[in-house]
Structures are given as structure tokens and as C-alpha cells.
Length: 264
Image 1 (cartoon, rainbow, N blue to C red):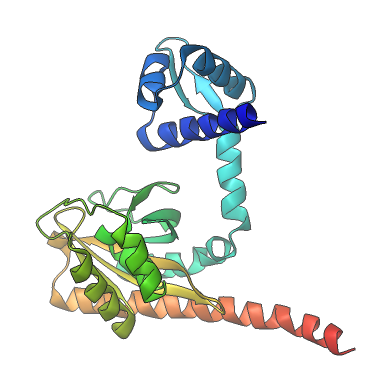
Image 2 (image 1 turned 45 degrees about the vertical axis):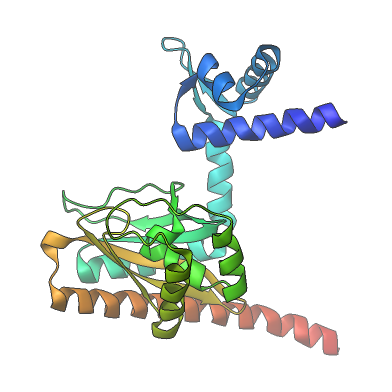
């Protein structure tokens, strides 16, 4: 039983490694994860046969396989906020002419689960399924602010806050003060904290239980002035509020039949 659990843990670590870092060969995977060669051979072959990994015959490098893509699509399908968000992301994009994004929180990362792209050649590059450190992004700060303050403090106390630009907040106490400000005003700003030259505004998506996601618009600094920043805040907070209202109305509607059944 213990050996089966160890094998499962190793398989999950392989998936996580390739998801984050991309293609790797047998030696790289074994070295990064400190796997015995015999175990690595068995696991990689099994995962490839099951479709969870692909192996390029020319480069002999492994990548995540189609079964993981299917699992990701199932996650998006079953994540209600991602299914409902499309029209609201598109509306924000169309009003501002800039890329709109949707993310959820996973630990201390924000994970992109929805996107409406602009046609501008110069834009922030992101992909559904990719993740960024939450403390360094507008989306992430909104999601962290949606946690109970003590929960946010606990998560941050266990993390090393890496500096990405001169604007990254790397002091946990300063970040907690920033999260308190985000809660008060109802949106977060990112002024080049993860990537220089990008302005981002993000707002929370809430259902009856609280913050479940965040919506943002990212704009290159060269295309936005103070008036444009104010308009971006207005559009994003408005579309996020509209999506939140739709989710809450759906939840209230779903609860009424159950309540009626309980009374009968």
C-alpha cells in the first residue's frame, strides 16, 4: 500500500514538473525529482501508455499528454464561474479594447481559467491554465484579499516573496496592508509588479459564499493615461459586479426548490 502511495505521489510530481517547466528528457526528470532510474522508467512508460504524457521520438523529451488536456477542460467545464464568465470578459475587452482575464486562487498562485483577447499586437501574453504568483499581480491580490485576513497572513508567512521588478511587494506586512486596501476599495491595481510596462486592474467575482475568482484587464503603459486608468477601473468593477450578481442569482434560484422541498 505504501509503495502504491509513493508511486502515485511520484506520478503527480512528474505532472506538476512538466506542467510548470515544459518538455524534459528522462535524465532531467529523474534529476529534478531525485527519482530512482527503475522507478522513473516504469512511471514514465505507464503514464505515456495511459495518455497522461507524450514522448517526442526525435528529442526524447516528455510533455504532458492529451488526457491531462481533457482533465483541464473538464475542470473548466465544471467550474461554474468560468462557464458563466465569457460574455462579461468579452464585454470588458470590447469596451476597453484590451485583453480581459479570469483567474482562481491555488495556494499562493493565481491560475488563469478564462480569457478574452484583444487584437492588439502589443499585449500581455498569458494562457489558460498558466499560473503566476498571486502577490505580484492584480488578479492575485484580489484573490488573496478575498481570504480571511488570518488565512492570508498564514499563507504569506510560509512563503518567500520573490522580487520580479522594482515595484514588487516583497514584505509580507506591506502586502497585508495592500490587501486590506483592496478589500476597502473593491479592486486591485498592478503597476508593473510582475512585468514592467503593464498596468492591470482587477476586481473580485463573488457568489453567495464569497470571492471565487477575479477578473482583470491588462494594458501596456504606452496605451493608457490617467483617464484610461479610471475608465478601466470602472469597466472591470462593473463587469465583475454583473457576473457576481448573475452567480448569486443563480445560487438563490437553485436554493429555492431545495428549501421548498424541505418544508413539504
